[in-house]
Image (cartoon, rainbow, N blue to C red; front, side, top):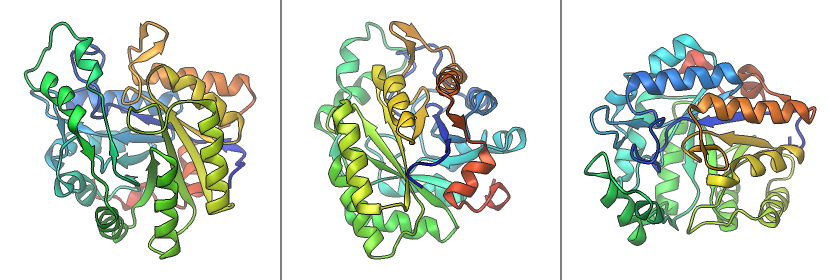
Length: 310
């Protein structure tokens, strides 16, 4: 599995890190999220990683009612795999974080594999005028935030979601998170193939250095052998270089406005599809084939798009 012949491209559509004041192109309303997701799939994304937002304020939301406003449209318009976050928004309770995935019963849900300091407060200092009252305190509070993912919380999320046939994108922000995943593998709470997402460049997690990418891959090789697929994302300016490096090593990639609002240095991405099209073009120029949604389903042993609840 490690050196698969085709590369899965995931796209994280809106996330919970960026705010409307950072870019005018951030999708916020249900119509914008649906349109962006569909366009990203048309550009080559096999997996769509989805968060919801309050349509009125743009604040992160895990309310199933907000997801219900765009998930059916995405399903009707594309065959891409839908991946629902369980990270939710910073500061949410576990019940809030799990609510959407428990309701939607998606093919894939994200699962953070360890607690960490998650500091994005520096972004607040770079914004002169905020569009919404919630943005500045939301960013600044992360100086004192622990993104909590205890073993009890992880076990609960895995147990409750896998009852619906949902599999996982295991988000690993540091080397220790791979060992946390190995713990659940040893207890047979999760079964291969494992879809591991290395997250690089978040302050509080592993830094976006090429040596760290190699170290994380080598560690995953030791822990999981041939039973996993390794994808990675580089936050901010590291997005495209890290995606390219990982793909050249036989891995998989994630792009999207959740992870970076830029298309190139100093140039805002005007859509998620722009980022997907760019990485697909890079992969094709390197003679790396891009997986279709059905090929991704087969690789990851997913239940199929007809088995979801939306």
